[in-house]
Picture (cartoon, rainbow, N blue to C red):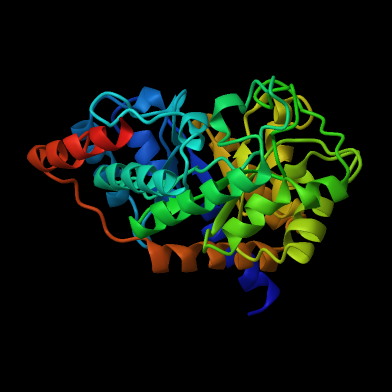
Length: 358
């Protein structure tokens, strides 16, 4: 394939690099057109998209009907505790710290399996879970009770169990927030957290849960908007070739999908413009960019296309990322049809699930 054809193919498919949020509990014609015409990778649900299990199941079905080729990623943050987007009608999930106090990782596996079964019933095929961060800093506002434990070994046991629980239930897990968000007192939703740990410290502590999860067939890792001055004093992890290429790819030998954290967080917007951020993240090595709003996703899509046309983004590199994403969809995603209201009653918040939580 010559260069012109590479560019045309990359322009046709570059929407696969974007997952977008949107407003409302129904799919507007404008959002449906964007999903279809831009050939987007998928969507992410938030609490404002949710009304009931029946509503979200039908919405997932409508979204998938917009795809002319491979299914969309239909994603969510459904961790438990304070990060549970679907509540009414779903089993209320304990926070990770509570689950982490269980004596064995088996409880974590069962809870994870339960979460995935309920998500799959309403069409969700990707969950940004589990949290692989070690709670090194107890006063961490972003992580806190979202972490399973303050000790590496305990976190590692539980995140590997959580990944297995999702995979056996047919939902793709995405461990977060590499290289580790546990040792900071700043929330990346607001500004850039600075982590002054050395690379050797990270190797001996923060990296271990992620490396073990990679061996458990976890095909996605979410990178946090975190600055590690002793590794890269200029670029947060999402935009750092040193972290994504030299460490994650080469040293840790991770060869699957690298996902950005929400590209609209304060940690990004205070340093980069909306359009520049999308291009720089892909240049660094991110392969799936998350946007909570459709407006920002549209800006990113236009910026990526422009960067491909102007040879700022290498079309061959873009197509390699797209090919990886497509292969994962082909192997892991099945067609979805919304179940009946009666089926959802038995699948969600069942007595069995309530007993498990108790």
